[in-house]
Image (cartoon, rainbow, N blue to C red; front, side, top):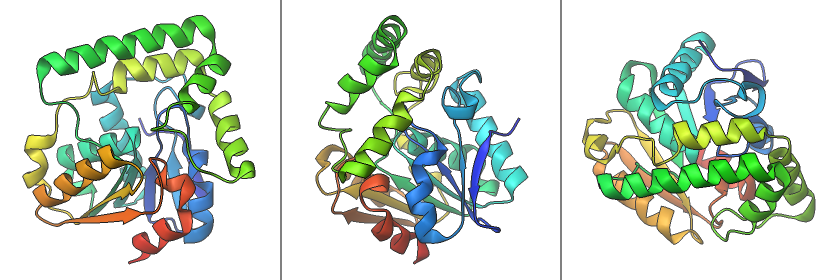
Length: 245
């Protein structure tokens, strides 16, 4: 079954997948720049807060959404980028162009992945116990995810996160987190579609991941924008220019 979507414009040719603790509304500034876009709410988030969250089910749901919307270009940011990559590898017939923003390929070593799964479980339990407000304050205090935004945009970002469901986010951590995701790095040479990897220059970890990912893809490109991890929120105009190209 397809995911609930938010639409801008009459003929959107791009499906966007959001990051953890956000929903499709995060792409509103990018949609204003592009003029048209459709953004899905992933399981555990937004209008899909009560949808069962598992990696395989989410990949199938995004594939169904591509089919229903008729879009063949897929963009994913962070959590959504990992999922977009999984969809492109599992359903290559549905994805003609792929954009991965601040995205990784999962964790290769089984023992490291198991530790990450335990960390995700601990955070899920913390969100369930302490509620959404405490989680958002702690989450946005992390240098990796704290966006460098103007006050109005920062307030909108925080407000969107505060609207999420604790139970939904906990389910997303358990089902879609890096501890639950299969490692996709070995499959990058199979990715036949043009793939643009985008990262922020102030996000060295994901910048390195993006550069390596682009090198491993047969038709991969790499671009850096003057941003941190949340490139979509910090540089919508520049990102739109890359997408238009």
